Image 1: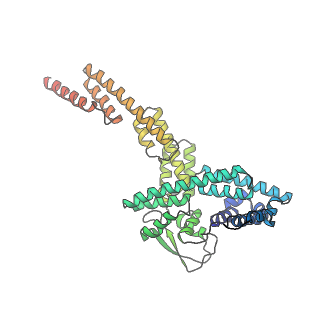
Image 2: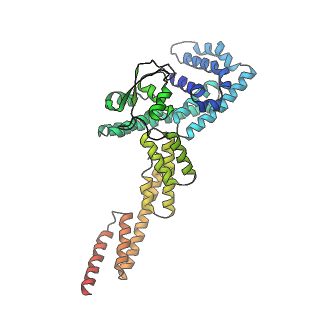
Image 3: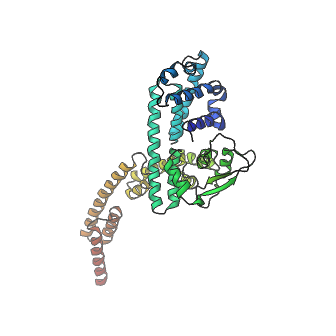
Length: 388
């Protein structure tokens, strides 16, 4: 894929392909300035060519640059309106964890507004975050691959590509080192497009970019009828989802808003079994589990709190700190239960003492005294029964 292809592909989807995005931005706004973005991309590409002495001065003074910086009042207003809408779209993507798409929005904004440092900073920050997350998932995938856990490895490599579709190492594993069983051949039919095939196969038209990557295609090029595409299977033995992901996500959102976190977590887990790379489902699942953990924490049920927190993605905001705090609270609670058990034991209430020490072991399985004290109390109970 060419260096500018991801931007062009994203721009095409933003302006034309996706009906929701078309409504939110409006072709009547984008059409008059489409040539401005293309010229800006061309100017940026020229400026990046090494060894071209004086090229930056030439670009600053050429017609394309003047068209952007010295445009008519009407064009400037349209550019401002487009920038505002792109900002909203970028923030919406970022909110739902779609880092790569948000990054491309900010990249287009840097081209439209090259002097705006805020756009440049946000683009660079998201580009770095996108690459870091892709690398993290790739490394996790390699570990699974070495353990021959190919299903888990495949999921991690797909997640890496979600954050960076050009992640070469992940592509090499998926296309070369992984079993060919992860692909299904599809013969292109008349009027087919990547979005239609993606919707048919995955119940999600937005996976068109994934198909394009696997087949080294430009997402916007016309398909040749009769040719074959390799469609990556996201779940072993799965040809297409048995549920409507969009509908399931909508239900999960409503459950979360109604504070039914248990059902929201179960529903998002179901979505992720079908589509492991679904960023919104992953974020919603983590948020639901976090709220469940908070409920347990308020009840001082730290055992269940810890179990729930460990189900979250370890990279979720602050979860490692929360786990450390809950472990500390568990140790304190274990000591308190142990002391109560000792009091019951001294007062010869052996059954109650055993119950407290059993709670102690649930909270701290490595407690140095609770286990032997339980055995001591049981022996005394047995002797009392024999005397009676």
